[in-house]
Amino acid sequence: MSDCSKQKCAALAAVVLAAGKGTRMKSNVAKVLHPIMGRPIISYVLDTLTAVQANPQVIVVGHAAETVREACGPDYIYALQAEQRGTGHAVQTAIPSLDGFSGNVLIVSGDMPLVTPEVWQNLIELHVREGNEFTLLTARSEAHRDFGRIVRQADGQAVRIVEARDCTPEEYALTEVNLGAYCASADFLREMLPLLGSNNAQGELYLTDLVGLGHAHGKRIGAMITPDIECAMGVNSRADLAQAGTVIKARVLRSLMLSGVTVLDPGSTWVEPSVTVGRDTVILPGTVLQGKTSIGEACQIGPNTQITDSSVGAGSTVTHSVLWQAKTAGGAKIGPFAYLRPGTVLEDNVKVGDFVEIKNSNIAAGTKVPHLTYIGDADVGSNTNIGCGTITCNYDGQSKHRTFIGDHVFIGSNTSLVAPVRVESGAKTGAGAVVTKDVAAESVVVGIPAHPLRHTNTEQS
Ligand code: UD1
Ligand code: CA
Image 1 (tube, rainbow, N blue to C red):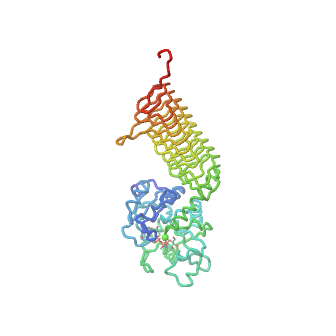
Image 2 (cartoon, helix red, strand yellow; image 1 turned 120 degrees about the horizontal axis):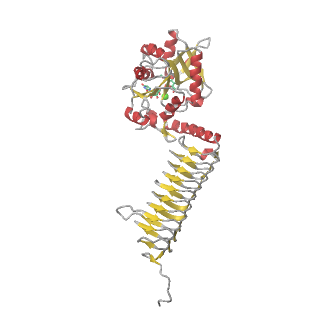
């Protein structure tokens, strides 16, 4: 994306800091790309900024710049901070991308996935109402001992941020901390950022020094104390990652419940934010719903079920099963212990029972596959019954072949269908048949290899 002067810029922009290494993650993967509930940490930050209509959003990249750029995609402006010389330097790097923009700029670390749109909205409102040039988000916390401390003067005005490692003992004892989310006027940033120095414990350009600098230059600086301390969490370690996941998970489940979904045991239920669930669906314990999954209305899902990138139609039940890139229409009865693999498509009211595996197959309405069966690369018609122990032998050791089974077919128990093979509508196979040749409509085959069943004809004998 080009710089801002070439676009229609709204009055709100954002800068997301994501150039740091994230050393404490002990990882080869860039910190902001570690997933929380299936999505990179930074995607939560970007989505929230989009929700408050910050546009453009400039992402400052450095460490693993290319992978971050690839993961976030083309909707953002990227500013390369080749050498990480501090948060102030990072914002300096972003400023040329905001050329021609003169509104307010939200600034936040890419590792703060829990800031909500409400918190941003409140910060922006305070910033505008007080006529500030720089407003920071703070909280009272005795837990965040490594965060910068807010120094206020006698009248309550915030005049300085001191990083924990630069604190005097008196400053260290302060309990109002800097959360690392800011709203600044673009002009203020342009004027003040060049004045930053690096006379501090880390020898870096601190963004936080803008408070002291701004104050010294007579700028209006504001600080909003949020009671939502949860939103402040930055992900710095794997433990933080799990904790942030817990918070996001709770938010997802809460919003599902508000929309009319019953979640029997939120503690053991994992639903990623990308999943949609229809009202009156009941989610039982031990259920994991991931990726681009949609569950219709009035379903019963679980217990102990994992559904990934799949859709389940209204009124279905899925019990103790795994679905992966599968689609079921309405009224499906899946499980217990079914495994639906990619390319499985079930039409209305299909039953797939225990110890059944299906992949790359279409199964038409009303068909039943009740037990101990493998259906691979098959097209099965409607109202057909697949007997216990049926196997489509789809692989001959070299390539895969399809099996066709028509409507109203009865496949006897323990039938092997050696593909490519067709069993036409209304046909039947006997128990234990090994079907190697096509079976005509309405006929019956039995045996190994299967042959048409001849009725004993007394007139000929
Ligand atoms: C920062 C704040 C601190 C605040 C804390 C809250 C400063 C100097 N301090 O400290 O007051 O309490 O956040 O979490 O800002 N980054 C870059 N380029 C750089 C340096 C950092 O992009 O050159 C990015 C990092 O990737 C990270 C973010 O900026 O996403 C914050 O940097 P970090 O070094 O973690 O700052 P903190 O020490 O946490
Ligand atoms: Ca940090």
